[in-house]
Length: 108
Image 1: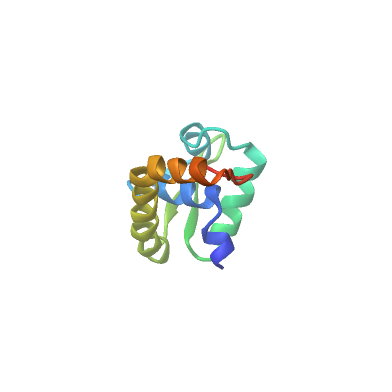
Image 2: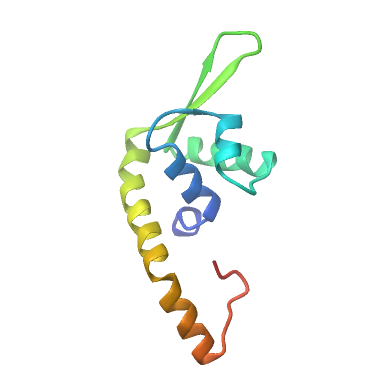
């Protein structure tokens, strides 16, 4: 579960759904760099975990809207706090990496 919650696409998707439900293409536009396949996979996993709900509106073409469940809402606040911490400390982390001569392969 920790690996799942630490995935950048999961974090970004959850934080984009905090304010309001969103349609697939809206999420894709908001989450820069995510492919359609990865967003689909992320949303399905979050739905399977009970963090996101999917609502199909009967129209032509059908419109699908994603929103956080109460469980997803309870996860959103800690994720937002973690994201804020990372943004606030990014420069210090980068300086430390330069001092010790390390640059992780998947550094932010």
